[in-house]
Image (cartoon, rainbow, N blue to C red; front, side, top):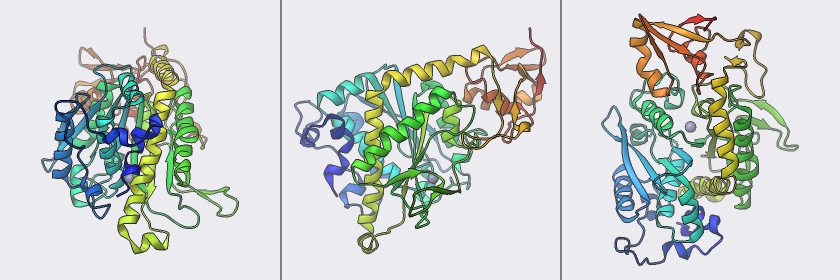
Length: 429
Ligand SMILES: [Zn+2]
């Protein structure tokens, strides 16, 4: 495998030679060479197995003082869900990578495992400085049962990336708890897609949160992450890029049709924005379009992974260079809900005007849930981090809180994916 490509994350950040990362270390524990993934060892002929992932993470955890691996949940088939934390113990800035929510889209996971390893063993000053100020959180295999079976959904056939509101799956619940407890400033969600040449076949497509409840500052920085950082970084490495879900004219490049990428809140990309993180979905192309890739599956696989790694470079650079901006917009977005002002949107997107019926122009000040309703959805509200007030016979859920827009999305009967139909309260003291 092209070892240098696998080291892009650490090296492009610094501009220093890749050899720095693999150079023997003076440390007591890490004299051994950095571990390699099953994918790397086979030059891309197959994907890294779960036992190989476990060994790699254990090795990295032991060897590097800046890496900590924890278990954040267990799947229905008893596989561990893991979170890798890389960086100083406490940093104000956190970036979360969510890798291969869809089990049959393995290349994001490979890029994540390689990135974890490279950052763990990086010795250069700039990477150290980056990790002193930013914690990278990685869920390397967000859907272990689906990965084992090579299926999109988990072992119950549930699409985890449609479960971020309902939280019915162990995978969705574990991720919600991470987002609630860590409050990541950036959430980067790695996928793969099937091409439709010549309209929809770029090496990479990405997309920011289109949901209209995303704070404008967060939305704009997410779009900038795509357009000013991730796409240029991928382009510099020779990969073509575009906007997820938008078919373009092969000659003019003009958009001709939208097939995906709407504003629905149950997708991680959109819920990231609603929860005040700079979100980005990124998808590498599965299909081999060149004769060389058609003739060599490993070459095809390496392009799928290496394009993700090139884009991750853009993310790391963004996280380093625009840390202050990111912290400012996420802090402002988190605080905005306490003013309890402005519309809440039950539909629409940043490129689709909502129907009048989808706009709560003057939303209620909260929703009342009966004790029975609260017994049904209390766990989910807690996992989301929604604050409730106990009342005599149930709870009151005020909009005046950080996750203000999420409250109607969860509790208003008109919201498409509501958990419960709360009683809208329009006058509050
Ligand atoms: Zn996917």
